[in-house]
Image (cartoon, rainbow, N blue to C red):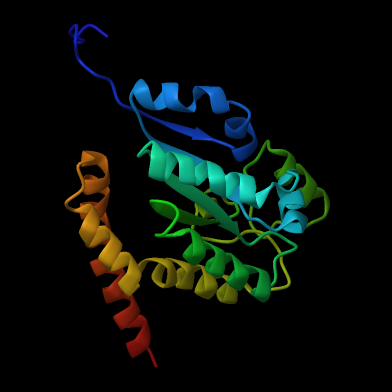
Length: 217
């Protein structure tokens, strides 16, 4: 760090799992004090049955939400929650419930919620299990992004994509979110302010997308 100067403050973000972070409560305030500005929390889903598809156990929802509250409201650290869609046990109802959960968390309880279609990357245990069960629809690397489903489920791929697109529009393009982000434009936390500015540009793009979808015959 040859360009560092004494007295300069470093800011950093941290990507983790809920069980790991809950195990280090004694470090939370020290993390904030030492420049933590944002946490990316991989919750995937609160549904314990579907979490088994990711090789994870269910978690204490109340404990996790209290943790999010501590960081967001007491420590003024932005929390971004990751949610996943499109594993074999998913149904239309489970994915719609996931959208409801996203809207429950954001914007009242967390600063951002990010959705992604589940991707069984080669080398992972999920990939090995799905390949053994012949549940992978493509082995072309270009299909392994975060906006395309390559996992066989009871829900048709086009329906999964429609629900997934609905997640972004449903979670972000709401009056409550606009109001919250407008308030954040005047936040003393410059990272909240910056996030609010990014939201405005994203929301405009999503509204245009919804307009295009509504006009499609």
